[in-house]
Length: 272
Image (tube, rainbow, N blue to C red; front, side, top):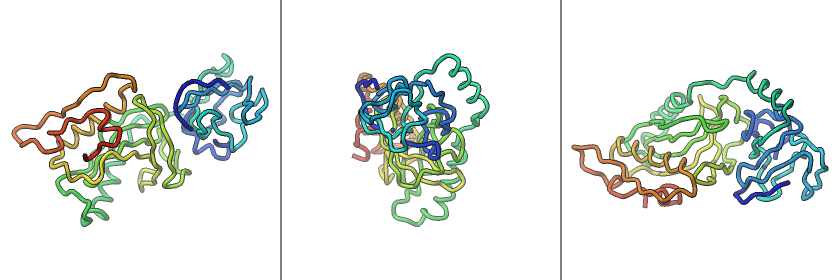
């Protein structure tokens, strides 16, 4: 095992491959026996040639054959947080061929998420005190991020960063409420699993809730775009202050008057 400075997470057997989001869309059988993998949280590497002396895993043990309860020896991450670093040439070619056999849908989950949350808004949320009737359901900026889609989901009662599986339903074996840490360019963030009818299980990270400091949809959209940009900014990038532009001739609401720095957006300053 080779440790590098970093963050936390890694565990799963072939029977638990539905949790394996780090590489190859939940299928451990796609990982070549000689492949080296790297923890997506702390960057510790697992090399089959070395095994893991910490957990008494013998040299020559392929990653897919690790014990079901094995975790990253550096940060205690679950095994599904590991991503393939490299593989022997012949095995790498076979790996690519196997990956090509399972095409990933090209369309984002944005439309399905909007439809699902609109139904929830109308059928369950509209009469509750947390509902801001000035706002609408909107999906913002969804794009591929590794083996998932990343974007911002806005509703009249919350704004969340969302990870959705590249293959619909791939995470449906994860129980609601299960927390996991995911590495984004700006740092590691905790997401919570939840099943959405019509979409399947997704992972969410709360940004704002409730949404009463927002008075118009345009301001919400600008804030969501700023939050997504902050999530994707490298962790060591200079601190930027983002002031979403007001939409004339409307008066500037409180949410736009406050400068939204990357630190405020991502370090718990929501709604402050």
